[in-house]
Picture 1 (cartoon, rainbow, N blue to C red):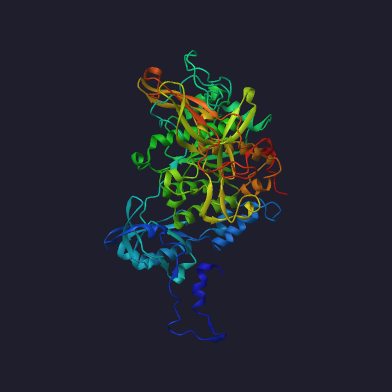
Picture 2 (spheres, helix red, strand yellow):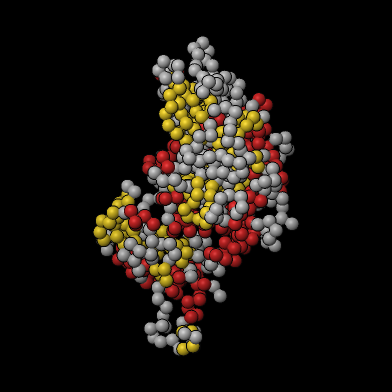
Amino acid sequence: MHKRTMATALLAASTLIGGALVAPTNAQARPGPKPVPNSKPAWLGHAQHLGHASSRSAVTARVYLAPNGGIEALKSAVAAISTPGSASFRKFLTPAQYRATYGTTAATAHQVAAWLTSAGLTVTGVETNNRYVSVAGTVAAAQKAFGASIERYRHDGQTVQAPSAALTVPASVSGAVLTVTGLDTTAHKVAPASKQVAPPPAGFRNARPCSSYFGQIQAKYKADFHTPLPTFNSKTLPYAPCGYTGPQFRAAYEGNTNLDGTGVTVAITDAYAAPTIKQDAKTYAANHGDGGYAAGQFTQAAHRPFTNQALCGASGWYGEETLDVEAVHAMAPGANIRYYAAASCFDSDFLDTLAQVVDENKAQLVSNSWGDLEQNETADNVAAYEQVFLQGAMQGISFMYSSGDNGDELANSGLKQADYPTSDPYVTSVGGTSTAIGAAGSLSYETGWGTMKYSLSADGKTWNPLSFLYGAGGGTSSLFNQPSYQAGIAPGPYRTVPDIAMDADPNTGMLIGETQTFPTGVAYGEYRIGGTSLASPLFAGMTALALQNAGGPAGLLNPVIYGNATTGVFTDVKGAPKDAGDVRVDFANGLDASGGLLYSVRTFNQDSSLKVTKGWDFVTGVGSPNAGWLTALHPAT
């Protein structure tokens, strides 16, 4: 019996009280309202109460509907289908099979819509596959429907209206309601994770000298090659690489393989869509030996009209998309890439975009280089995201997320914490390394990405310490307990991130190409970039080769990742780098030498409070994938 019909059935049943069967009284005939789990805003404890919201104030909301059979049953099915040795391991479903087994029915959506209408709210739509019912109305109607007073508050720099207590719904629909979003008007938006000095399409160029491979040029002199530079801790450091390219990354991580990702599709989600991405990606591939794009190899899914472009910084997202597309192609030149553009940087639009990914079911891997602080998340938002991640896992779709670029987040937020969605147990969190790729693509060494910046003194004789600059995100989740796949490998009892890591340091980063706006006009240009939003598409591209070898999708990767934590598939990243860092040269104006040059030391393995240790750690997870990962995803037997 489905949960959504259980309450109705109970109305006709006898009630067991004190061990005796008795007929229900009139007071017992209709079960009371049921709470919606975790629907009281978590921030109420530190908010300033501003009074009651006007009963005539506008309200819009989404009532997300529970999967058929309940969310816990779906989570159990995901655990089974993702765990090697299970009878249902990798017996994935098509979208139609998923909807037939777990999808919310039109009848249930109609039942919920009828209740909302009876409470005085206007149903403005039902999501195509009955994920949620959209409503609009007044505060008075919302209070009647959800049984909680809606008040006005000031918290975390925002003035909002929100329920003052947990929401309730009638027992007759309680089994059908998963969560409710929108009654709390706190703005939830995500940001791209890439670290760049100036957001394209405003023009930016990296200065010279820089090294073609790590260690090529030692920083003994300034750019004139006559004026000495000081040593750092009595040692001469190399100049930062100009930016690694596809051949270097493939040689360092994938080794000598004939795999190229053919037959696999990698989806990328970001906000907005760079208007020059196809030509930029084609130019970059031609310039750096990644191979051209075959007809139909790169596609862009249909998207909703874009909104909030000024608020979200649309042009910054263009650079993120460029990095993601070119990094995937660099690692998997034969894989298909399908780009999904969210209408804005707000969670509701990303949720719709991710739902589009799983409903189309064209991609086996999804790389996501965006997120937000866990402290900014709410239980309703998390439930809505997990609804998509769980469906994807049942269909064999693997989600990966950048772990963040602010280390333990203390300096950024005042609180040590992880980011979300990267901390969700149903995605793979990708952390970051500083990666030294030597001549001919040899992997000289890896260490944790964490950067302290030192500037060159005015007299050019010393390096002056400034502050922690950036580093791979990681930490202990405040939202999730430890998933079983981490037990015995990562510290418990809570979910910890990241799971794995790849190159992310902007000072050992990737060279990418993008059309930008320079003082002389619009033109294609190339620059070095990093962040865990580089690590995520690098891992997605490399995993495309593993899926090609396995002959099919893998779904949630984490059980296999942790099952191989000590098998040699992942390289345990060391905390003692051979070099303390490298020397970086920047144009003072970001464009050319006319404004002068800036010299700085960017250190390695100084990631806030996060430390690289033997085995799993908060910077690199179980380590970085090596060529063994290409054969680790064996097909189900």
